[in-house]
Image (cartoon, rainbow, N blue to C red; front, side):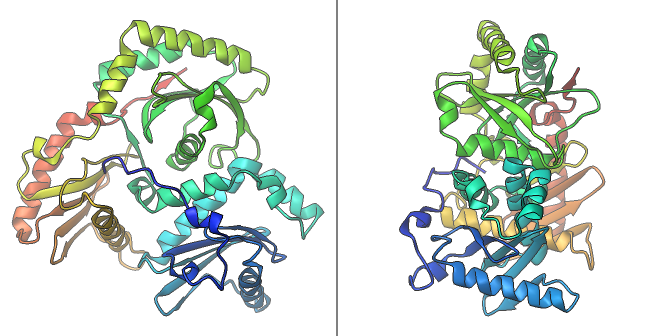
Length: 428
């Protein structure tokens, strides 16, 4: 959807809320990380030390079920769904009254786990607990809470996580190719990936042949950039583990903004920890070339008008949609317009998409097409080998009219494909 208003992420952490605090239990979604020895590591809301007793209960529940040679996955109590994931010596728990499905909550907990791996690597995490079962992992994760807070905020609003896809900044493919050629010309011998991103969207990606970046690793990268103010002050050099690419070791990321407004971020990833200065030299060449060939200006223009409007499509009854190209794992959607332009309505629409996605991808009975009629809107979900589409239409639309509108929408997307998606990423 459209750009979200910036708001403090998980602002309740500062309040040191605990079980006695009346508003603590009212949050819609809690996330807890603890070790299998019951040591608190993270809580989305409140101070994890003050929540040691509730984490102790969770650890007891999980180990009680394990003793019975079984695994605690989830249970429902009142309005709340409790979901657990045991990963080696870590227990991750999510408690939500959002109406999301167990499968969707498990996906979210896996992202939280991937965030831990991105900081420590799987190999280091395993080694730590092999040496000391009751190790306090907070010592190694100190200062990274902002990444968990930011990730959980994104999980609650960004369709990219439901769709397991990422979004590209719409721009003419000729411009995108020109930018990729600049990255290609400046690359150094130890480079593995180079990418340019802005506002949670990929502008271009350069990768070694035979290597690829999956959406879940790209989300880790987007979150790294989103949650760090420090990258705005200059060039940074940071170790980063991409769990799907290689969960045992670090890549080293040269991160910098290349425009005065700090909207366009360049990341160059290498497997050599000693090449900061080479990559810094490459960055200077890239900035110089993108300024002189006009591409930097084109990027800022594309950012200014990034979200196309439904009116541009001329499709009757259509209000909003999410379209995922399954071959490229990329998605596109228009800006949110009335009635979905308030935070409450945007959140309600997001939950509707989640519900429809769950019905379409139900393990018990997957569907190819699904029409969901409500008082405020009708949603149509349609999955083919090539795409997934979730469209929001007016509440009075007939089934036939909905299908015709959606077919018209697909024709429009096919025409605009080169502008909305990166069909071929550059390799070397």
